[in-house]
Image 1 (cartoon, rainbow, N blue to C red):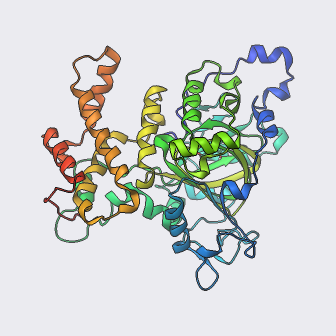
Image 2: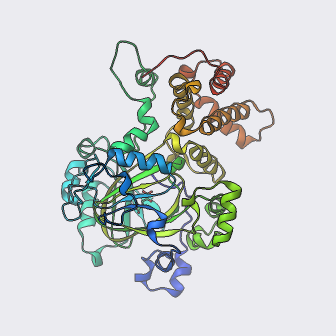
Image 3: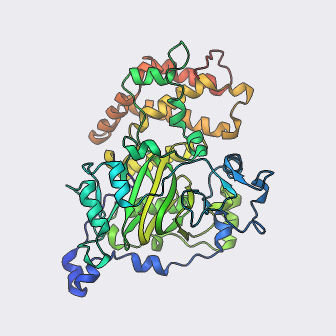
Length: 470
Ligand SMILES: O=C(O)CCC(=O)C(=O)O
């Protein structure tokens, strides 16, 4: 599974570039200058939730506990209040990075402060590594961790090319065992919920049923990113609109984040389908709104405040913990050689976005290898899980809002109608078949019409069938 965008990257036209560039320039991604010249309109602290050292002016003081600490409870409350639509950046969150650690931050997670040699040892020198050539944004074959470690340790001027690793999942390695993802992320991750409590109790629980049916937990929670100075990751939305946690061990990164306004998402789809993607600076395609227009949009479309900006750049430093919400379109510049641990998660607060992102991936013909593994299957399982565990009548989990559940049920109906449609073209028939075989009948039952009816009843609060799974 390869992480990040499903961009259908177009190769750079080296011949054309060669006419005007020296060899040195050929190793610089053509969009880096645009990135450096990008100007944020508003001050950073209005654009993201910034938890930093300056506690006296910190507007998030209300979230600190009675000991003056920002802990897991504080973060959980902040996520719930902001509904995870605004990026959250906690400076100095990792106690293992002594130089930057703010000892008022007590977030439970574990990311060791290792250098590239130690990381190589814990990952395994023979492990295959997807190495991205920054100029083409494509992965090069035949790299293993040993070769990567040598490359990363080579002096800057002696490296043959700028290369970046952003999709190496390490759950199954010694390093993966040592890493604990932030507690709040683990609690928000809806896939983790499905696989909870394995082996507990006498009755078979959902986790065991899934595993018995060959459905394993997708490995997307623990990636290591290893980027040398000058690396650039072009604009993308993370697969299935997953949210991201991102915490550097060392180095310096700059994120350019663009909010997921509908008009921006439309421009994004168009850009992804363009033949000249590498040569087009994505922000040049988005409509620039002024404050008056933003306010009008907010009233008409009920947009979150966090979306009312034209994008901004934020520096991410060692020990920081960034939570990047679902669907934000972002590009990333590596200012200094960097090692980062990060991961992706689906969550109920962003469910509407996950479904929207799936549609964009279909429209922009994203290759399966860049998608969330078995996304459709998991959406059906999530629906089943919710039906079994949440009583709409009792208002349980209403923090997610009934709208999120309505969207989900509508999505299932839409899929089933598509599967049964008689007027599909050849390519659509292929997609319909893929959906049909993704529906986990051993979980939701073989009569899909019945299942959908039970989902409708559940949604209207009329369901009397309810057994707790977990
Ligand atoms: O660090 C990078 O170069 C890319 C990271 C990124 O875009 C992501 O985590 O989604």
